[in-house]
Length: 218
Image 1 (cartoon, rainbow, N blue to C red):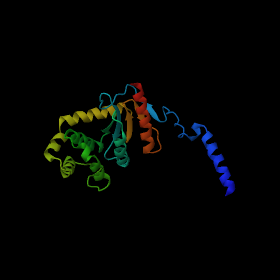
Image 2: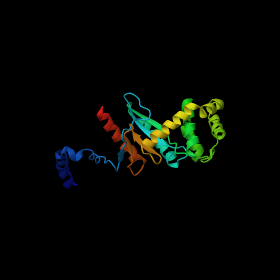
Image 3: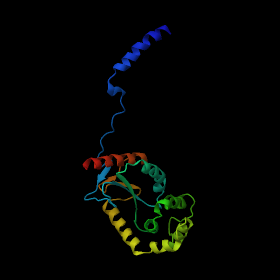
Image 4: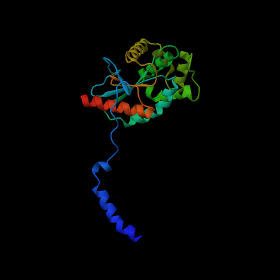
């Protein structure tokens, strides 16, 4: 113990003399690499541009199990976003069984109930099985939204209306122009399609760095 007591002041002095860099946070991550971490979208534009805000669009499908797994992570991440960043869900309309639920998303959005029913649709498809993944009829989907407190007649009118037709076509064209081939896919400000990341957290980290790049361009 006497030896330890004599050495302790020396150790404290040595630590104090260490360069600041030695005690600093870990080094910054390696630069993002185009073609590995992201792809540039030629002439890309945000899906729903908002003045002074940077869009992170998530191309998703309610029927996609991977999107269902991402959703709770994304909901938590959304709460951490600065005020100049906007998260925009964009339903993929690849065809077939993707279409009924993409229409449902836009109908719910039109009625102002999309955010509060979003997780419930994922749960109905992937947790409880109360909605079918394939061959979902308009009546089945309408009945589900009615069970969530949405006026059924208004929902069915929106679901079958021309406004949803137009939104569906716009989403289909935008997703195709962005080169999206699967879901979930993150697109930053319409310019960058996130392709890297070994897990969802990595993908969100890449998106954050691309957001910072866009912020630096202002």
